Every structure is written in C-alpha cells, then in structure tokens.
Length: 267
Length: 271
Image (cartoon, rainbow over all chains, first blue to last red; front, side, top):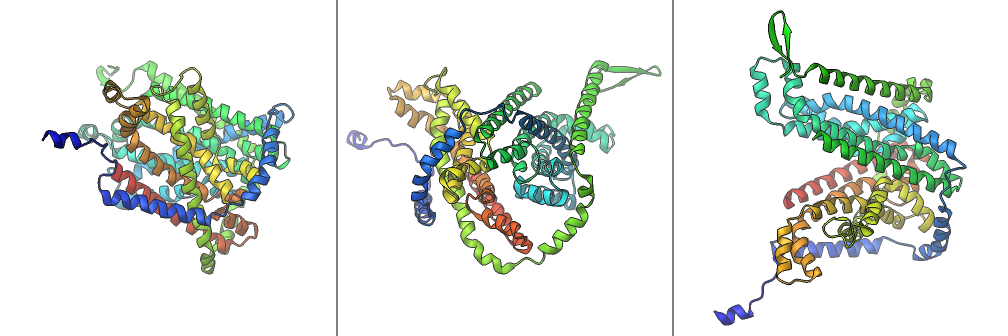
C-alpha cells in the first residue's frame, strides 16, 4: 500500500473526460489546421512588401486631424445619432408584438413559428448586406440606414425578449389572470413588470450596437458617420479617418458606460 | 399602497400620482427626441425614391429569380476561404485575448494602476470598430486577400473574447485559488491549477460563440476586398448579375445556419 501510494502521482483531471473524444477533437483540429494553412495562400512577398507601406500608412493616421474636416465629421456624427435613436425606437416598437408572438407560452404554434421565422430571417444577414439592398430600394442617405438598423434590431431584440418572456414566472401570470383581467390587463400587470428591467437593458445595449453599426452602413451608402469615414479613406485623408475612428471609440465608450450604469440602476 | 377614492369606494392603482406623472413626462421627452430625429432624417431623404421602392423591389425580385444554380460550383472555394477566415481569425484572437483578459481582470492583473487601463482600452477599441472597418484598413496595409480578413477578424474578436473572459475570471471562487496558494504553488501553478480549471468552460463557450459570429462577419469582408465569399457577392452586385446574388445569399444563409447549429450543440454539451 505504501509503495503503491509512493509511485502514484496525482494529475489534473482533463477537461474533456472521454479520451476518445479528447484525442479525436485534437486530431481533427490538427488535420483541419493543416488543410487550412495549406489552402490559405498568403502572399508573403506582398505582406513583406506592404510592411514599409503599412508603416507609412499607419504613420499617416498620426496625428489625427480633427480640424480640417470638422464640419463633415460633425454632420456625420449627428446623422449617425439620429439614425441610431430613430431605428432603436422603431425597431423596439415593432419587435414587442413580434416577441409576444414568438414566446411559446403566449402564442399558439402557427404564430409562434411565423414570428420565429421573422427573427431567423432578419438575423441571418449581416447589416451590410441588408444595407446594400435597402440602399438599392430607397436610394442613398440615412433612410436606408435607418431601415437597415430597424430590421436588424427586430431580429436581435425580438428574439431575446421572446426568450425572456418564455422564462418568466407563470405563477404571477396565473394570479393576475385569476382576478378576471382581460388579455391586455394581463400583459400589462403580469408580464410587462417581469420583463421590464431586461427590456430596458437590452434596449440600451441595442442602442450601443446600432451606433456601432451605423458606422458600417455608411460604407455602402446608408448615410451617417460611415459615409464620412469612407470618403476620408477614398481621399487618402488618413489623419481625418483616424480622428473619426477615435470619435467613434469615444462615443461608444460613453454610451457603454452610461448604459452599464443605467442597467445597474434598473435592476 | 397607491389608492384612489372613486365615488366613495377605494380603488387600487399601480402607481401613485408622482410616479405616474414622472413616467408620463419620460414618455413625452422620449417621443419628442424621437420625432425630432425622425424630422432630421426625413429632411435628408428623397421621398420620391422611397415611394418608388415597391416597384424597385418587384423589379429586383424578377431579376433574382430563378437563381443561377450552375454558379454554385464556383462557390465551394470561397466558402472554404470564408470558414478559414473565421476559424483562423478566432484562433489568433483567442491567443491574444487570453493575456489581455488576465491583465484586465481585477484579481489577476499585474498592476491595477497601469496595465489594467491599457488592457481595458485595448478591449474597448477592438470592440467599437467593426471588422469591416478593420478590413478596410488592413487591405491597404497587407494587400487584398484572405490574410487581411484573418487579421481583421482577429483584431475585432480580441475585445469581445477578452471582455467575456475577464468577467469570467473576476467571478471565480477565490477560496480555490487560496487553497492552491496554501500548498506553496508558484504564480504559474496557481494560474494552471487554481484559475484555469474554473474559467475553462467559459473559455470554450466564448470561443465557439465568437466563432459563430465570425462566420457571419467573414461572409461580408470580401465587400472591401478581404477575401471569402463577399468578393463574389461584391463582383456579382457590381455586374448586376442578380441571379448569382441569390445563389450567394442562399449559400451564406446555409453556412450561417449550420455554424449556428454547431455552436449551439457545442455550447449545450459544455454547459
């Protein structure tokens, strides 16, 4: 017994317990990586060639030039903010009824599948792809960006809200129903108070995302700060582009801290 | 309890008068802001084009159907490239995100005064700039192609992975770390035996989650020249070959759905 104990050593238990799965995953990963590196033809010459150019390019970003394009930048930022506000409000307004339909404990099967289908469709495309199509349909400018962000908001907000409604406490809903409340009273007194903190938190989170995405939809013609950024890149005014990027980072930080603070206060 | 007198009987209501008024004022202010924003957007919109949209949509629909199925055979390689961009980008991001997360977590950071703010700044800047913008910058530096896409995805994912990971690290059970420390373990051993096992499930979940998002994002990187199926999408849109666009969109959707399914399965297995 003592000799056995002396020769045995403790080892850390592995993360994946089944050894076959563990080795299989490792082997699979190795094979995949070999294949992937084999087929990704990186033109190393081009990369090395590009490095001095890249250095000059990065140097072109410094110092950021806030002054010479300030009017355009300010215009773009404002446009992005309007787009963000309007699309968050409209997106949430549309997603609330869809979320009610997409919650399995409220809606019958056909409506449930219809609403889940709406979420799936609006979530499966990137904002940029949606923006390309909406710019095509509605013409250049902030309206196309606004529609894009609203549609994206419906998919995101609606899905998460529907899941939150599904997770609610059914006892409270039953208690309110037992008082003889009609359907709208039931929603208003039993369900809404339960999901309200989450709705506010998600709304602020989506506001934050919409602002970030508004920088993207501009690249394909959807208006906002993205259009200004794209113009700066096209004109090789990298110092102005750096200023715009810094402003975006700054605003995102402010929005994020504020929304974090509000969310803590709400919950 | 807020109660109101009504014809001699007391009626319960949800809120008292002050709260009710505050909520009403909040709604009024919110509506005013929204209407103002809407007004500004409306001023910049050519409503003529918007009214024209249904006709445009019908026209587009006509051109997009039937899909050009023969084109599908040329899409395997770009799809493989897209998956590679997402996967290799995620791997690279994880390699960089782990040290960043340890520097950013309050309980493991080497110095709360200097290193932590830097790590947090790295996280915020990486998160606030979309991968498409990173790609725009990187295509100019390293040239168009898959490599720029991988780096763009990696740069964008560092912030996301590091943020979730450092939150997981901050939530670990300190008593386990203390127990390991009490055995006389070195700093690296504490990391390996006290902290790593606690955050490993979170780490695996985050990686798969981000991989799923990256598949989605890498499908559009080609729009700015960074490789993947987006290149084909951009070319087809530029050439107004809408029947090919339909096929590409269908391929993108199915890739996204499959990756979402895989990620959901894996995360389910972990938790």
